[in-house]
Image 1 (tube, one colour):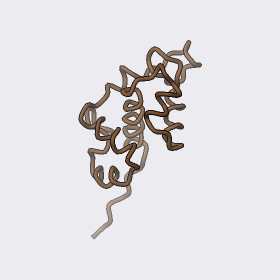
Image 2 (cartoon, one colour):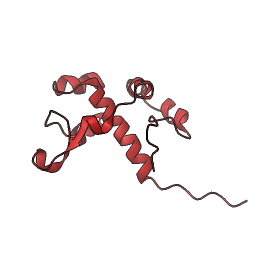
Image 3 (cartoon, helix red, strand yellow):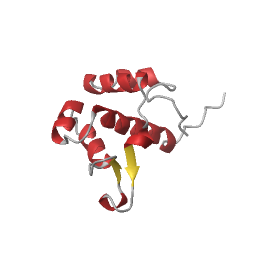
Image 4 (tube, one colour):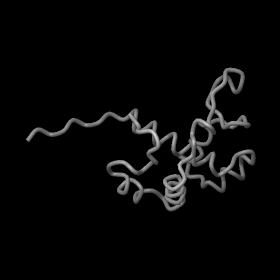
Length: 114
């Protein structure tokens, strides 16, 4: 389970993970570590907005859309151009959400017996 208040990439192997990222994401992750976004203040889920999908507060832009854009290699600047209602902190919140979800969802491999 993710530890509250811990920035993405700051756990075990975080440096190794961060060094494997493209430059455009490394900068966003560095900024998220210095100024962790309040994910729950930026990402909401309400039944009457976009069918209950997670969206960025005050918009109809879904978290899934931003994560798909990041996965496709779009930079923060490209995402902000495509979705002018978003702020840089929204993209950081999406990355922080994904990092926390990965920590929670990925199984921990068993420790080898010595």
